[in-house]
Image (cartoon, rainbow, N blue to C red; front, side):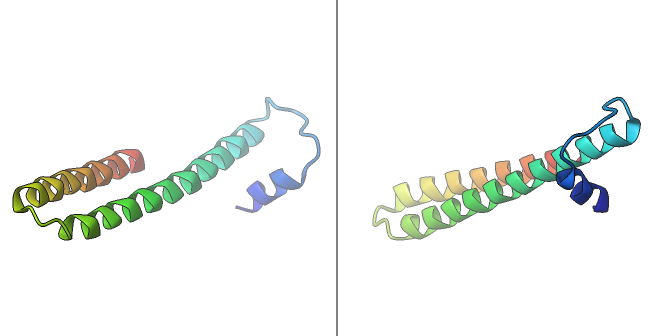
Length: 87
C-alpha cells in the first residue's frame, strides 16, 4: 500500500518499462476497481432492500410472490457475480 501512496505523490513517472512500476500501476487500478465495485454492490443491495419493502406492501398475493421470486433471483445473481469477480 505504501507504493500506491507513493505513486500518487509522484509528478512524473520515469521508466514505464520498469516491472515494479507496472505492478504498482496494476495494483492501483485493481484497488480502484475494487472500491468502485464495492460501492456499486452496496447501492444495488440497497435498491433490492427497498424493493423488498415495496413488495411487502402489495395487496395482490400473486404479484407479491412474483416480485419476491424476482428479487431472490436478483440477489442470487448479484452474489454469483461477486463470487466470480473475486476469483
